[in-house]
Image (cartoon, rainbow, N blue to C red; front, side, top):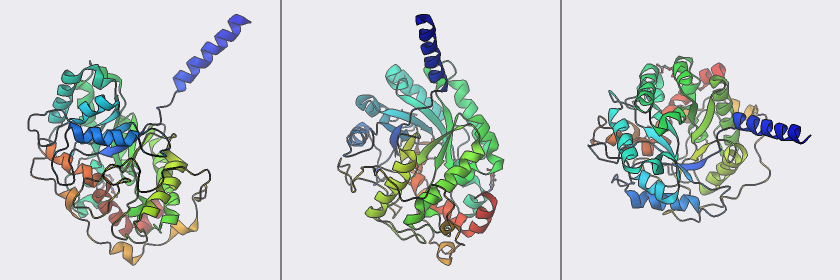
Amino acid sequence: MRATSSFAAAAAILAASVSAATPAYLGFNSGSTLPDRSAKFKKDFVQEFTTAQNLKNAPGKFDAVRLYTNIQAYSETSEPIEAFDAAIETNTKILLGVWASGVKNIDPELKALENGLKKHGSKLTDLVIGISIGSEDLYRDSATGIKNKAGLGAGPDVLVKFINDFKTKFANTPLASIPVGHVDTWDAWVNGTNKPVVDAVDFVGVDEYPYYENGKGNNIENSGQLFDRAYNAVKAAIGDKELWMTETGWPYVGETWDLAVPSVKNAQYFWQEVGCRKLFNKVPTFWYTLRDSNPDNTMKFAITKNLNTEPMFDLTCPITFKTPEAAESSGSEKPPSSTGTNAPAPTGGADSPTGTGAGTGTGSSTSPTPTGGASFKTFSYAAAGLSAAAYLAAML
Ligand SMILES: *[C@@H]1O[C@H](CO)[C@@H](O)[C@H](O)[C@H]1NC(C)=O
């Protein structure tokens, strides 16, 4: 009896550990530069990570961070980003990022990571929860990205090569077993031509901004449904690969984008109906964002002012939600509106990496930061709006 039950218990533990899903990390995105384009240093990251962990009424501990680069901003010698030092000091888990667009190789990125390992050893590797090779490169390289001058991207075969470059170089290090992924806009993931990237990764990082989905009825009340439809479309496209929500959020200030109005109240609604209902403590999630970094983007996504631990709105999660569970409401089937198709041209950021040299990867880290959230999507969804009918017919 005793033996049987302890065997059963052991089997249960084994089964649990075998099927154990990735923890539902909670974190924010963090670029390598400040709004004035100067470099972030250790103290800046410490400030961010400390605030993130102490947010009032947060639905969990935001003790993870997603980075866009391993390279300290403006370093030309592959110095490791000082976010590593700050993460160690604050016990913050790290989703590493490798900038992969407009570069011939990712050697400087990998070199910086190697330097980080040399400098910090297991203090660093113990905190690493994964690595994303690239950020929205497929989107920028797509027909719509090119048409919208979204800047240099990278195609699926280039990304697969970079993924293998990482795996080869770190094969005999403590990072050999971390999940390797790629981050892109949801519409890039449902594009069949990009399937080789899905096949090459352990997890799929998805960026989703219903705010930018002009032409699809993107008023705040519909944001949960728009979110679900894109999320489900990605799920269907990636089979059994894990989905990590790498960017999502709603601006508290900025221009009205088709039917989407930025406001603190709407940012809170989105936090509740998308974050609380679908993501927090369910899916690894990196909210966009704690601190804005893109001076060119008029839409601001930060949930706090000046890294105050009391956010602009109450982060408490409600118990019931307004978004209908079956996200098939006719509201989201609206045809593209003229507002949508005439969406104002997005401001720089995405397509204007600063002169510090995409070649070294450092300069590019100033663009993903900001843009990551905003301007890339600006292009993406402005474009998606233009062909919304096709999108709706084809995938939703
Ligand atoms: C689909 O992906 C391929 C490869 O990344 C890209 O060239 C193409 O433009 C994409 N199609 C659309 C409609 O974005």
